Image (cartoon, rainbow, N blue to C red; front, side):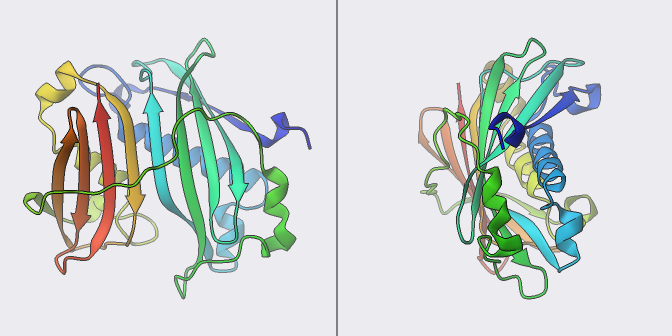
Length: 247
């Protein structure tokens, strides 16, 4: 199989209801596009949700890192490329490139996924699934951004709280991974987005939360324009971590 055939390419457009007050695609919507493209790519190669659900398996996002030079503008078409970089026993690395309407690469993303049994919530050995066929799709395409990094919050003071509501819950019955991104970005005042843009955004998912959970947000500024965040449940269980770098 040629390297080009291992890469999925998917067209999208920055709809007016997917952009912010600057007219640029929001990070949450971009993240949703990335997850959708991962699903399309996996489905086309026999590892999509529909096939997995027959065995009560599903994909779970563990880490996500996005770096953008610029965001697509309202009504602009853009393309997302995605491919599998590595497959390990319990995790797989999936990368992305985001191209503008001229075909120029304006950003990249890295993600780490696990496959779990929906009944036991335990990980599945990817190297034995379908005889290890998933390794046939490993691709050596370049992704010139750093891998997801260690995130440590140095602040015990809660900066916000919310209770998980209907719009936060996904088809699996837990808090939608993209909704975490949106709620985190809402912690910053509008003035921040008037004068700065998000250069890099990272998420590290640790545990699931559900409808009715009270989530607490903790944030510290590690250096100029770099923020580390944690979200915890009411029992102090860590749900996820995030890092945002503005410029």
